[in-house]
Image (cartoon, rainbow, N blue to C red; front, side):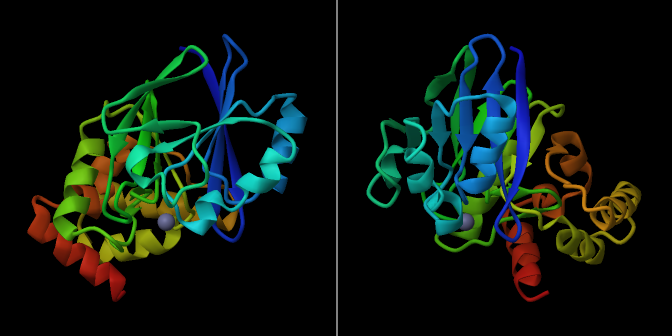
Length: 239
Ligand SMILES: [Zn+2]
């Protein structure tokens, strides 16, 4: 597998990503917060938009799609179970389903919690997590239960540790400050927080992040059970 992934900042703090299969030239966008930065990136790279993969139905992940459809005719892919509240889907997928972006093989992971039927897209070496797992954080539990979100994060935790995590928002600085209140003595976390502060001061994205680093420093991923996760998530909601 040979691919290139572009990280594109959108709106106030969203990220979208272009996944380009080098073998076939096929390009997929993961979520569509807004069109203009995506159109500019496609033009700069000389790529065509062939697919759009949607993680969940929130407006800041789908509202850019209509304007993209004025320029390209991508295959739109999303969760079968959420088809009624996602934009019109050409391919519907369920947990465990495999799909292809050119020669790249992807797999669907149901990561419900932030929303029900939120999905992640896992490829060799890269996972697109939307608003489930963030760098040093996780999405707010709006529709699911704490148990459900904990279970979803643990599905991501067992991916190969060298996997890069492409998450949907730049929330890392706030997450870092909170994480230190949970694990003030975690040396790996202390080092990472310094790195995050330096990157953000320079305006550099902290996404993607390495899964092994999340496993060492992300308190939401490190919670030993659903009860501990719930305690940490509730504390973050009130932070
Ligand atoms: Zn969301």
